[in-house]
Each structure stands twice: as structure tokens, then as C-alpha cells.
Image 1: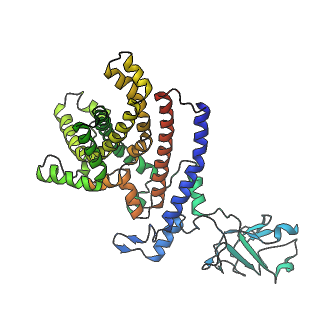
Image 2: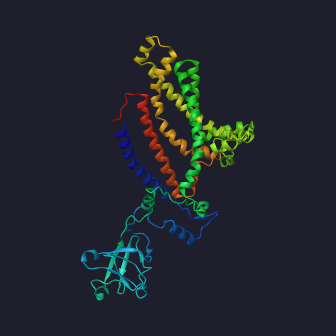
Image 3: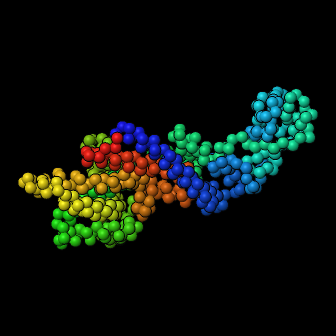
Length: 441
């Protein structure tokens, strides 16, 4: 098992890398950028250029290669490599007038404006630098006259000097960079901090929804299988089909109209509840319940439960429908196996046969859904969080896409993909517990 886990982890690295490449390319292919507007006004061009340079968005997306696009200006201090110099055996020097000294670079030099022959600001093709008449800048073999009338072409020496590879170099250090959203840029808020703030909200929603889904789905599937081809089976199947057929974007507003607008049992949406003290937080429990402030604790707990009721019911209903159908189908198949007939012929009670021998094997296909569910627990539900104004990971991702917040898009994608990969690995481990015959070694 240990070798299998190590092998799966190693194989997940290229999968995660491919996800990052596709996501990075698609996010940058969207029209517009994070600094195109400021509020409702269009950002001035010079401010947008400064912001793009500050966050490295002025660099090529994947590779710094020559192209036939519009020219760009050579920046002072840019490092380039001169064609042919590395093969001549001569020593390439840069003359730095402020220091009055030659710097050995061996085939590379920095473009320096020394006054006489200004090479800074030349129009060149992206990825290329055109070197011309560098009398006072370069000395070859100590003879300055050899290069007075020569024209040499040079290219930027680092093809990986691009947005993607710069981002990847930060990711391996677990640095997801600052958010590019306008309100977060002013605060210099990091993507890691945003994820830390939003993950607990999505986890609360996901854990309770998953609990409701399994609490309703598995018993419903068992009842439908036990009472096969009866009114109970037909009713359970109808509920399962109905629950899967109605999407959350439709079921959510229906529940809001019934329970919030008409019956007024719960609030329509209460985004402030997520910014208040969590009644499940041990610190809040110590500060209220254990200190005897029962009114404050149960008041907060009641408001928290009302805010969670509709979104949890919306997600849990659809989840339980799928689990119920899958449980019913697999349990019917297991109940027809020979070892179930053998268990019954030995005189075992029907309840023991059902829950000890049959249900455990019937849950193996159901466990397959645990991997994506675990990812959904921490990543949130895009639609539900938007409908009920929940500041979770799903709403954060939607806001990032709308605002072209590339770093947040990538950070959420990395987080979601990692959890999904680990969830599927956990499913494989659960297989061996449910069925000892399964081995991955």
C-alpha cells in the first residue's frame, strides 16, 4: 500500500501541472485584464502600464520568444546575449561609466545608456534586442575599433522569463502571490490569506450538506432495495429522480420563496452571519457557554442554524438523490449474490444479513463519490454561494474570474485540484477497508 500511495502521489504531479497550464492559458486568453477599470471608470493607460509592470503582467504569458508582433522598447539594464560573441573566444565587457570599470560577463551584457550612443529605447521585436555601433560600450579583445561599424543581433537570454514560469517558481515555495482584485491590491492581500478566510465558510456548508446527503440517501436507498417493486420503492425512486432532475439554481430560489418569503421561517440571505463568531468555534464556546452566558450562545447558534438551513437543504437534497439511487442499485445486485443466500440459509437474522454482509459491499460504488464530495466540501458550491450570498470559495472563484484576478484563479484551482487528487486517493484506501480482497500492491 505504501508503494502504491507514493506512486499515486508522483503520478499526480504531471496531472496537477497540466491543470495549471490549461487554467493559466485559459485565464489569460479571456479579453481584458485585472487593471482595465477602476470602479466604474476606465483605468488610465499609464497607470495600467505601471500596475502591469509591478505585477509582471507586461511579460509574455508562457515563453519569452521572438515574434512578429509589435516592437517593444529596450529597458536600461536588460540582460541580453550577443550573437556570435560566445564562440569568438573574446571577452565581452560592459563599460559602466559611473563606476568607470569593465565588468566581465562572457557573452552577456547589460544595455547601459552611457550618453554617446544611446541604445536604450530602441524599437525591437519582442524577445529580441538589436545591437548597433556600441563603440563606448563593448570592447572585444582590447581593440575598440573592431566593433565601431558592426551590427550584431542579440536575444534575451532567459526564454523562461515569463508570467507562467515566474508564477511556478513562486508556487513551489507555496507563494501564490498577491490578489489582483482592486480592493485587495490596495491592502496587498495575499491569495493564501484569502483562501484561509474563505475555506472555513465553504467547509461548514460542505460538511453539513454531505452529512444531510448521506443521512437521507443511504437509508432511502436501503428501504427502496428492501421493498423492491412496491409503493415504497416507487416513492423513493420518484424522490431520487426528482432530486437529481431539479438543479440547485432552481431548487434554491424555490426554497427561498416558500420558507423565507412566504413563511418567513428563515432569512433570505444573511452574509453578515459568516463574519460573526461561529457557535462551533471552541473559543466562542469557552467565552459564552462555559462562562454561563447561555443566551448569547444559543442566540448565535439559532441565527447560524437559520442561515445554514436553506443552502444545506438545497445541496443535501440533490446529493441524497444520487446516493439513494446508487445505493438501491448496488444493494439489489448484492442481495442476489450466492453468499447472501448462504448467510440466510445459515439462519442469520435478516437485519444482520442486510447491514453486516450486504450493505458493506454495496457501499463500494457509493464510496467512489466520496472523492469529488471531499473536494466539494472545501471548494464550495458556486451557484449556492451566489444565491445565498455566502462568502465562500465558490463565490471567491466567480469574483476572480469576473475581475480577471489571475493569481486568485490559479490559487483556488491549485487548492481545489489538490483536494480532489487527495480525495480520490482516500477513496482507493477506503476500498481496501470495505473489501479486503482489493489490493493495490
